[in-house]
Image (cartoon, rainbow, N blue to C red):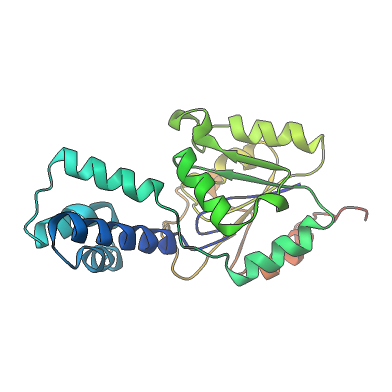
Length: 227
């Protein structure tokens, strides 16, 4: 079984952010009469300050950034209907693999948000198991092993692969459990920090999912029905 992460693995997470900023731009314009909130958020994002984008945009528009306002904006951002699309190589990869191999997905983040992304991308039919970890609560986010154990049970002893982007949390658990760990390094991804140690390192890095099967075979992975 090949298991995928979602954000910055199958689509670019920045696209979700920009979609959310557009929704908030309309909300702020409607409720305050101030224009430009979305563009200010995008500028903060481009400067690497996406975690403070709402505060910066409110300050620039001379609007209050009190906890109630921020909470409202965060809720709208997380629950908006996202305007996102699969990366082309991800679409090709899922089409190739889903025809002959069970696939899984493990993704962190608020459950409703992640399920809205899955719905917008139209990918649910490709996966045998979809696991937003926050279904169980944020304490079960990666690197907690619970989601990986669930996928192991579904795989029934078959070799497992995890394809993801964030070396700080994505690979340490599957590696210790004997999975293949592949890092997808897309241009424009959010998480570019190197692994803090060997335990967090992937077995291999790729820039496109078009290279996934060949890379896995080079590591000794045997496609289903072969070997």
